[in-house]
Amino acid sequence: MSDSAYRVETTSRLAQWRIDNLASCTYRKSDPFRIGKWNWHLAVEKNRTLFIKLYPEISNLTRDNPPIASFIIRVVCSVGDRKSLIHPEITDKQLKNNDDFIWGIEVPLTGKFIIDVEFLDLKIAAPDGGEPFSIWSEGCTQKQSNGTALASLSKMLSESIHTDIIINASDGSIGAHRAVLATRSPVFRSMFLHDLKEKELSTVNISDMSIEACQAFFNYIYGNIQHDEFLTHRLALLRAADKYDILDLKEVCHESLLEDIDAKNVLERLQNASLYRLPKLKASCICYLVKFGKIFDIRDDFNSFLQCADREIIAEIFHEVLAAWKGF
Image (tube, rainbow, N blue to C red; front, side, top):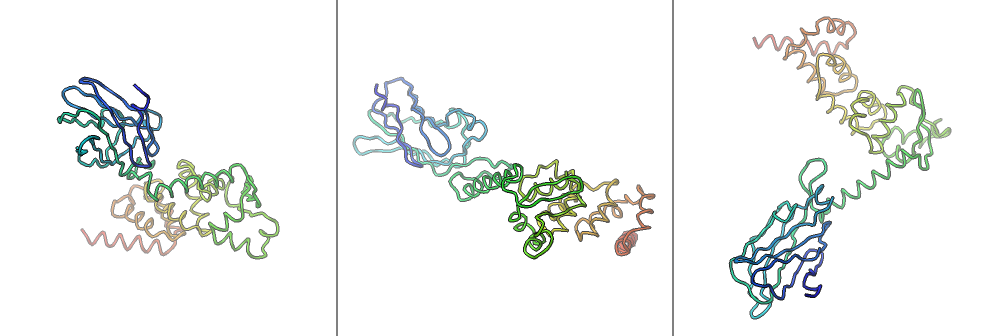
């Protein structure tokens, strides 16, 4: 049997396998063929019923990112009036192995026929656990482009590629890029645009941040901060976001600080909420203290807090206390 008997012809989304003859009881598997990111196989097994299988070739890619396929599959008799059998459209079916899609055909087929697979879409699972996305969509192209750009930007920082300004923290220095900082922060942009000492000396002094916190700050700006690093330096990042007017970082810190309010940190969070104008955090801290009664669990700390707290915060807390008493 010639090699062509196993070859599948393809376009970008269409695969056709021409079979000249099947013995009365036989099995045949095609050569691998490429559609999307994966190599695929078609297989036929003929006994009393003809079974057709479509599956991706086993690989690291298949194991880590199995295709989620939508397709139409047909069997076309290639002689006579070209009668065809069409399987109902398959939509968003994950295919990992040769048992995930099997089509049993009871109608006897003899002579030459064609198995025709038209791929309507191929998706992979999102790395962040979100909805699967199409490898052929604009979104996938955008994700790939964004990922590559962020990796390059991160490399510029980590390997100090063509840095043109030095950031001096309280206990160390980092090389950075004016253009990146000016794009991310209007404060930095103003520094470099006007005849300030930062422009003349090619340095920026951030003496209120440690080198570790400063590194986390610039890792965020360059799109490469790790979650543990973010949590460790969350309050320092909030201060920096407010100081340098980086609104997205400020909001990320705001949302994160809402997630783990407890008796040990609630008063500090309340103070920061007032200082940096974080209304949701302020409301959540006051709710924790008053409505949930935690103010009694930290009575001594709360009394000390009242000695130095902003009058506006004190007024809001007692307003909530009075409102809570009215409910009884």
